Image (tube, rainbow, N blue to C red; front, side):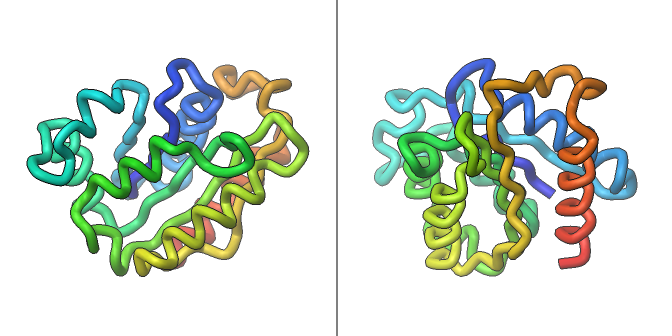
Length: 173
């Protein structure tokens, strides 16, 4: 399983939630291997110059990670009512067809009350076009600005239950 924190913003809530999700996954699925891919070190100028002509080492490493996994969990913060542009740019830079036949689960984050519902819908459309089977149970995490996900002991028990449910459901897919 590959978990992707879909923003290049440093010290983001997405990164915190990704680490929480990864720790829950490792606890619930200790027999499965999980990799983490974050975009924090991905700069647009260095990673995407000449992306259509010749891929650089960063993109090749990311592409290699994607090709190794059949299941991918995307942590998607809300950016301007949708998902981060860096994620779309990254997908466009990868070899076309690399996602075909894979399975995905989606987790939306927002400072507002809907947990990036619209962004998850938009991204699901992109994944459908790429022939990715998307888990119908999408996790929406609202009001992220009011939580500290770094301290796992202070995270709401209901959220932990929802994460656990998504992990268990996704593992059956």
